[in-house]
Amino acid sequence: MIKKYITIIISLLFCICLFGCRDVVDGSPATSEEETGDDEIVIGFSQLGAESDWRSANTESMKEAFSNENGYKLIFEDGQQKQSNQITAIRTFIQQEVDYIVLAPVTETGWDTVLQEAKDAGIPVILVDRMIDIEDESLFTCWVGSDFGLEGRKITSWLERFTYMNGIKSEDIHIVNIQGTLGASSQIGRTEALRSAVKEYGWDLVAEVSGDFTQAKSREVMAELLEKHDNINVVYCENDNEALGAIEAIEAAGKKVGSDIRNGEIMILSFDGVNEEALAYLSEGKITCIAECNPLQGPRIQAVIALLEVSGNPDKFSYVEERIYSMYTEIRQVTVDGKLYEVTFLE
Ligand code: GYE
Image (cartoon, rainbow, N blue to C red):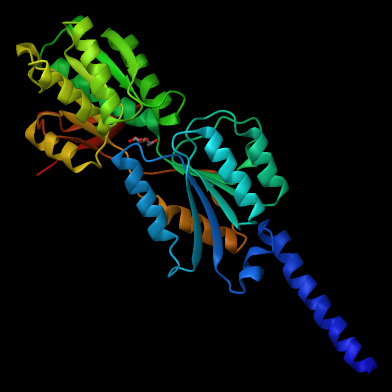
């Protein structure tokens, strides 16, 4: 009898040690896996919305990486462009005691409280795509995404080359910026790149208006801009869906898009390179240049989690490599901060 009790106590101590230690090793709670009875890793992913083709590709990439076949249980929440929805999703993930929270934040500020709650619950938070603006960087484990400022500097440096090669004076560049969702890192980085190029090269920045990264909003704001200003010759669209909307508005106003701005065409510059139609427009010359933004981050986040699972230490910030696309073969490369970037010409 005594022997039996001793055996039970030893087994219990072993279990406590095993599951207790797991908390110490990777900082995640010890319940979800044990509750489900298998060793799948539970991920709560708060995606910010479904505003663009880039976003759909990003969601797909995450779902593929965190499939059941790969040993994960993915709890996916669409924030529908609202930070409050994303905060609610994170709180629900905490209650569900997920192993990891992955957050694609809609805008940069306002995450301190909820990420503190995640930290207190011992759940690592991994950021994907956009960045957050937070006092205490220990509230997130790491970030994987794009250098939005660099994307913007590549495209503005391309435009500078173009004006130089075609003998177009800086003051004859009348540019409008259709911005992304205000307060999103991708908007902030791309807008700042344009503003500093405008300052440096002396272009005329006619207007900056948000198109919310959507085709419909962009069409609407572009139509208004064309009514107000008759000298616009470059449209800097902060993503491809906005480029498609801007093109619709320009064509509806009886104007032509293209790179021949000395003969009245309106040049479209864009970001992403994901939407099929936008890529076809690039081949046709309706869009002149696209700075690539790579949405396929699922495998990268998967690698981060694999590393955390073995108590590894991922880099705090990992930038994705990206290209610049054009059909204008005269410009073969652009220089940004002393570094050369080859231009990719589509077939
Ligand atoms: O460029 C745009 C999307 O934050 C990089 O968000 C992302 C941007 C992307 O809606 O298409």
